[in-house]
Image 1 (cartoon, helix red, strand yellow):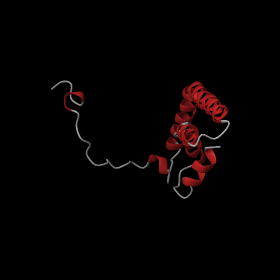
Image 2 (spheres, rainbow, N blue to C red; image 1 turned 45 degrees about the vertical axis):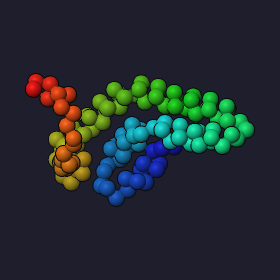
Image 3 (cartoon, rainbow, N blue to C red; image 1 turned 30 degrees about the vertical axis):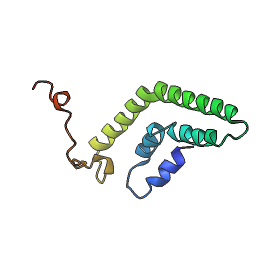
Image 4 (cartoon, helix red, strand yellow; image 1 turned 120 degrees about the horizontal axis):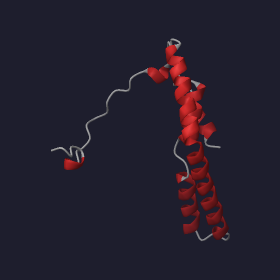
Length: 115
């Protein structure tokens, strides 16, 4: 179900369908289900135990399916991207460099362990 809203949110970005599908499949998952279940649990609605089990199974299956498919689908997307850029890839939105964001606060030695 998440792939449809992701596709709609990416409409007009110029990203090609393999990229939209990849983002839709590997994008954020499970969090919305957990948040909604917590909202319902706070309201003490009858059947909240069943809802909790359904959410737990849904999130577990999502983690399992995405984990099992990660390597194969990432390799497949990488091959598509490689073929597309080698074939010219003119106008390929995915190939546009992303500008660096604002500087982050440094964590000290964690960022530069050699110091």
